[in-house]
Length: 232
Image (cartoon, rainbow, N blue to C red; front, side, top):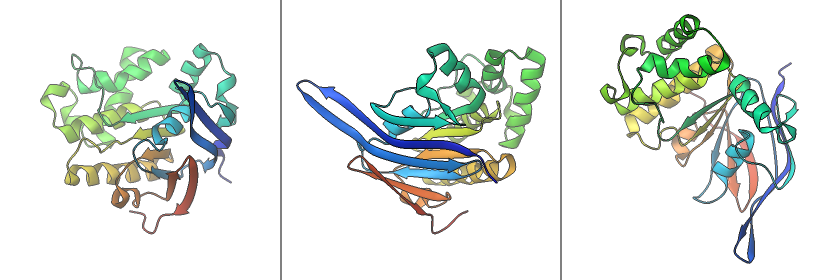
């Protein structure tokens, strides 16, 4: 039996806009088990990134509970949340956010060094993860010497190197052409199968979203989930 990685109940998020209150999320329920993948789609400003940030402990809900690995993350202190993120979560963004002065392997090793591993062990694990994303031969190259698709694969390796239970991806292919975008989604599917890591991917591309196991539509602050018609 798979364990729940995400368990959210009645999540709402309200922002103050001058004298007005704007309710971005309205009682969102979400459950995801270990190894499942979910794509979240919706129009711009629908709250997709807000929901992702709440799941990633980067924002807090106005009401409701968000549990990751059975932990109510809102009840943790900031330092506890940082430690929780490092142990359990990986993040992939539209822009890779690699450190330009460091090589690919050094970028991937960074979360492990933060975790307290020795440089030797961190580099060994980082090289292994770069091999999984097909970039072992580019490990010594700095981001400036890599293509856009290669940089995003390095970012994926960095997100997965700590062996997190859950990876949160915000428009991971939004800065790539169609061919490279398809390669990234195929890679996510491959890594999901080999590592049993759960993925939540925010995207505007319905065709690519359909490659994942489930699709959630966020509209008017409410989330509706359906099974994908095709899993790559």
